[in-house]
Length: 202
Image 1 (cartoon, rainbow, N blue to C red):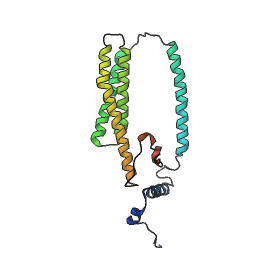
Image 2: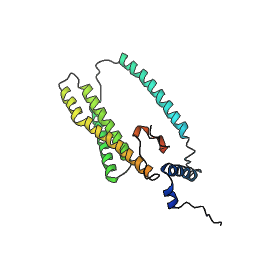
Image 3: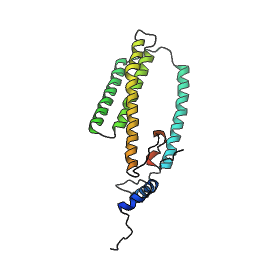
Image 4: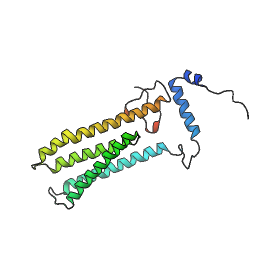
């Protein structure tokens, strides 16, 4: 086997600028995953096309849902007697319990899935507050439902969403710091999908 005299050592890497180290890491990633691994091909996943399809699908869903909302607003009765009322609410609370349990387990084990658990649990809490307040309007339980939403459910949901946001930023910071020791993480809404090139400061 021939020798490889041009080998980059740690000292050479430290002389590179953060942008040069980031570019080098991206090129190495492309080389490492240029061929299918265990049936998967990272570059084979056309991320640009996937983003376009995702955006188009979301737009179609928004248009369809907007039309459905108009239909419901024009056709739904103001009052409606339903069956399985107890099952609906007990089932919803069981889902909340499962979400809280999964979140606690993920926190305890220190798993990245805790971010998804926080988002799901926060969303369920918001739904719980919404239906409690709306369904109790003009009833004797209205003010109790409003107080419960403002004091318990919505603050808990806010804490969970904020925790998820901070964990995502922390994960991004750790990932970026492995490429650049002095990298700055931009606001969450500006971070590219799938760890693409970070945007420059405007």
